[in-house]
Image (cartoon, rainbow, N blue to C red):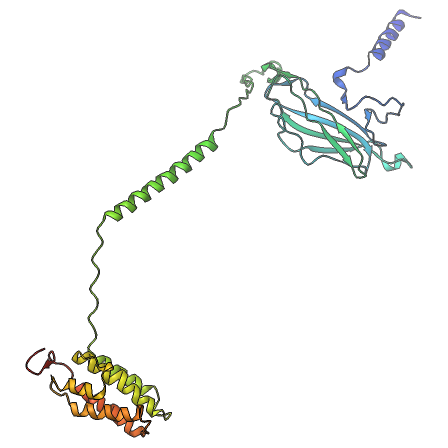
Amino acid sequence: MAPSTALLLLVASALVDAGPGPADEPRPVAPPADDGADIVDGGVPAGIPGVTVSAKVEPDPVPFGARFELVVTVLRDRGQLLELPASLPAAEAAPQTGDPRRSVEELSLASDAGDAPVRVRETIRVPFLALALDDVSTPAFVLSAKDGSSVEVPSLPVRVADDPSLLVVGDAGPAEPGAMTLEPAAGSIAYRVADHRPFYAAGAVAGAAAAALLARALLKRRRARRPAPPAPPPPPPRPAHEVALERLEALLAAGLLARGETALFVERLMDEVLRDYLSARFALVAEARTTRELVAELLSVSVPGLDVRLVEELLGDADLVKFAKATIAAERAHAMAMRVKALVLATTPAAAPTRAGGAP
C-alpha cells in the first residue's frame, strides 16, 4: 500500500470515530428507554408511538441581558399534533419575551412514503431573556396529544456568560478605501428597578381626597357662621271683593243650574261667596253666625253701599232652601247670584270700613 493511501485511511478513521460534538446536537428530553425501543428520525422517543422529542438552548452560552430561545424539535407523523400549554411558568431570572413560534418541515413526501405516514419535523421556539448569571433555566412544560397522552419537556440549564464581547458582531475584515469604520455597539446591561408608580398614584389620590374633604369642611363651617338672610315678607292678602267675584264666576261656570242642582248652587253661593266676603271685608266671623246674629253685627258697620236688608233677605231665602228643603227655580237662583254680585261691587272698599261711632 502506498504511503499516501495509508495516510488518507488513517484520517478518515479518526473522523469517523470522533463523531459530532456535543454542542452540535440538541439535548435529549429524557434518556432512552431501557426496553430497547427503536429511535426513529433521531432524538429520544417521547412515550407516544411514532413521536420523538428533543430540546436545546440557542445560543449557548447566552450573554447576560441577551435574548435566547428554547428550541424544541418534534419528529412525528403529519396530523399527529402536540399542543402547548396555555401559558408557561414564569421565572424572574429568565422571563418569556414573546409567544412561541412553530414551523413544520416535511421529511418525506406522500409518494415516497408509500403506505407509511408522512413524517414531519416541527420546531417550536420559545423566546426568553437572561437576567441573571446563576441558576438560570428554562421552565418545564408538557406537550399534549389529542388522545390524552403527553410528554414532558424538562427544565434545561442555561449557561449565562458575563462577557460583553459575545454581543459584538465579528470583524468583517479590513474596510474599503474611503469607507467609514463604525465602532461596535456596547453590550446592553439590564437593571432591576423597583416600580414605585402605584404608590405614587395611590398617594396622589389620597391627598386629593383629603384636600377635598378639608375644603368641604371649611366651606360648611363658613356657611354656618354666616348670618341667615331675613325671610321675605309674606305677600299681601288679596282684596276680599276680588276673591268673591272670582268664586262667583267659577260657581256660575260649574253648570249646577243647567243640571238642575239649584239647592247646591244656593248653598255654595251663600257659604263660599257671600259669608266669606262679609267675613273678610268687615272683619266678622260670618261662617259661625246665624242669619239673625250676622244681620245684627252688620247693623253696626257703616260702609257706603252696604244694604243690610238685602243681606238678610238673601240669607233668609238660603236658609229655607238649606234647612226647610224648599225648592227654588234656576232663574231665581241665578237672580240671587246677580244680587250678591251687585252687593260686592257696591261695597268695594275705597277706604277702610268704619263701625258706628267712628271706630275702625
